[in-house]
Amino acid sequence: MTTAIAPVTEEEFFARYGPKDRVELVDGEVVPKYGADGPLSPTSNAHGRIVVKLVLRLGVYVERHALGEIYTDPACFIISEQPKRIRCPDVAFLSSARAPAVIHPGEFLRLAPDLAAEVISPSEPRAYTDRKIQHYLDAGVRLVWRIDMRRRDVTAYAPDGTTTHLAESDTLDGGDVVPGFAISVAELFAGVAAD
Image (tube, rainbow, N blue to C red; front, side, top):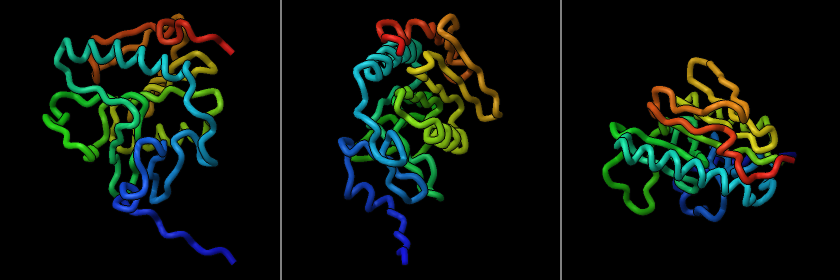
């Protein structure tokens, strides 16, 4: 006989887990950030290099044009109250109109970012990432970037169901979410060996 496990509340989640635990809260269930069956592997140096490159380029652009704020994992967003979903994108952007002027230590933002970017490691299951991207879109994220290290491409998702696939020869842009921002896909993967 199996016993049902009660959903974890937001209060229990914050009392038990911290940034080092690398977990998110999805529909009342604590899930490791990199897979439903447990952490698949620590993030690699290649993953970190791509994240930092994107943060630097996007961050400088956003600050120079006073467009808003940039956040990186382990910064988490409560993107849905019912069902409770707490997600921690690798890179996130909040526009000036939506970003809080002050953030208090220990406080999580109760809103979805305008842009969420996830750098997908080769060991990360596609179904896991697809679910996460759908959660972002359902929560109102206006643009999601799926940066795939194995395929060395980027897919941009919009809430209307539009997807744009970009190869290394293409340029990734911020559309109307981060107007004027652009970076070549090749630059994102520069210095990262192909598998």
